[in-house]
Length: 223
Image (cartoon, rainbow, N blue to C red; front, side):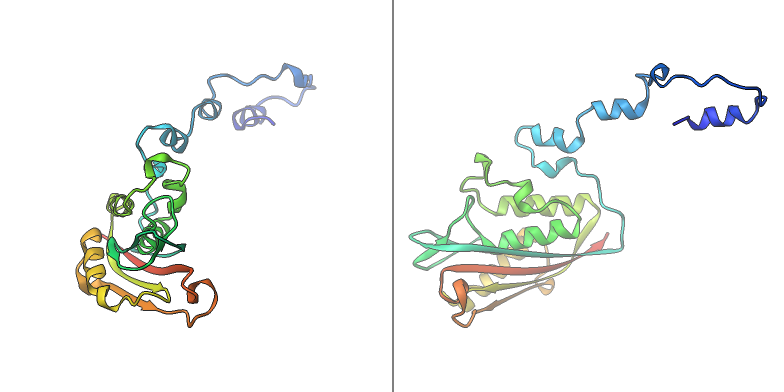
């Protein structure tokens, strides 16, 4: 296809018969920016290759909207003999979450909600379970990274509403401790952090004490 400049010039020349240039004679200049860009690795690919850097490091800032909403969900299988960590707090139980990291279903869920609000990849893409760096890692590492990305994008927490779903154990004795730790990790006032816990009425794997799940909705406000 002729370029815009060639069409412009053609409008100023006479209508005398012209010889069609054979297609094989048309060559692209190696200096064209579009071609040079294609030859360079993308920012995301470069970040993936960078040692000890999460894959999201090179993702551009989201549009400067006045507020953004994100939803997070996570579910883990419960297995005997494993520690149960919820919101960074060790909960006494005969089962714990089977996971690559510490399996903290609540923190994973909150991280995904923040990333979703920012329009970024989910936690599994940024901290993949195929990466040995995250084997047994505390989920607070993921939380701090998500909070850092939130501030870098120019946002702060408006409020967060999280719901835990598990049949056992009862969370009420640990609820305020979990919420307090969540506030510390988010750098948020307790008035904007809400935590609820529900059973699953003995229905399916959640109700049979074979799994644990969490939902989170987060509102981010422009600074």
